[in-house]
Structures are given as C-alpha cells and as structure tokens.
Image (tube, rainbow, N blue to C red):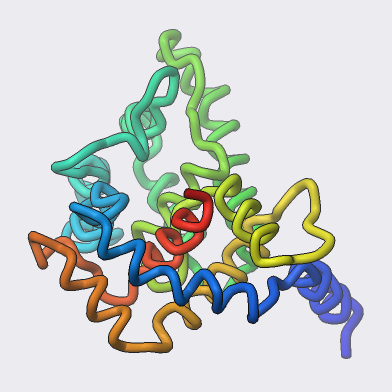
Length: 242
C-alpha cells in the first residue's frame, strides 16, 4: 500500500473517530415522524426549490455559460443561499464571468469531478476566486470581495448533486453529534467528515421507506421534491437542535 494511500486512510479514520451512538440516533429517529406531523410546511423549502431549479437548468456545456449560471442559481421562494447582508457570491461570480467565462467553466468542472479529493476541490475553487478577485477588482473597483467561502462552495455541490451533498450547517451538526453522544468532536469539523457522516445519517433516515414517503407527502407542490436529496438528513439534524 502506497504512503499517500495510508495517510489518506488514516485521515479518514480520524475524521470519523467521533462517530455517533446508533442507540442515541435511534431515539431521535423514533421522534422524527412526530416532529414532522406537527409542522404546517416543509422546513427549508427554499433549499428544495433551489435544488429543483438548478437541476432543471444547469448545463456546463452551454455556450452561454454566464447566462446559464445566472438562470440556474435561482429560487422562487428565497435567494438567501447566495444573497444576504454583506454576502453576495452570485453577484460577484457574475462579474467574474464577464471577464473569465471559460476559466470559470473549468473551475466548476473541477469542483464537480468526483474522481478528485473533496477538500482539494473546494480549496482550489476558493483559491481561484481569490486570484480572480485580485485581477478583476482593478477593472471593477466596487468588487470588494468574492464571498465564495466554504459554505457557498458546498452550496454549489449540494445544488449539483443533492444525493451526495447537502448544505452546510456546522452548528446544527455539532449539536446533533453531541446529542447523539459522539466522542472527541474536533474544534474544526472538516467538510469531508461532515459530508461522510451526513451520508450515513441519510442512509439510516431513509432505511424505512415509509418515513421517506411520508416526508414527500408533506410537499404541497410535489414538483419541489428532489428524490434522494440529503436535505432530509439536514432536516433531521436540525430537528435535534430544536
């Protein structure tokens, strides 16, 4: 076994060393249907809408990549994933696209390449945004920041592949891990460990088809439901926080 593979497996082990207690997990899972029944609407509906919209529009091969990006990053309910007070990643990317459309196309191609290490893909994307910002702010002095932090880059991943990634909520994740008696939770939770454990949670939550089917029935507009979306796992950990 090569040295790099050994290190990779060791890091993976460290990332999952704080695996939660399945018995504690089952206690919260048993309560989850009752939590859902008390609701008047689906939690995070704007995220479901954004995923559905992105899935319908995104096409990395479109010649008008800049127009396609603008159309795909959209929600009819709320744009809070990419717009907020002093937080404008979509607007900054549109400015980047005015000058470096093909390079940014290659950035997204690299980000969505599952044959490459996740953290490296995210780090490279942010690095390229940093470099583009240095170059383009000379032409666009009002471009104060590109706003592409880890949360926004993970948002792209969650929009592009909802069955493999979900949106970042480290505070709810940490609370859920503590509530489910996970041990040795690190101060800094990596995206890799967050993603791997959220996938495990998704598998457990969807193991009973009746729960997944019941969740789907909560949608007033069934078109908003994205099959297999890990938003179900996100909802579950956020329900523990509540």
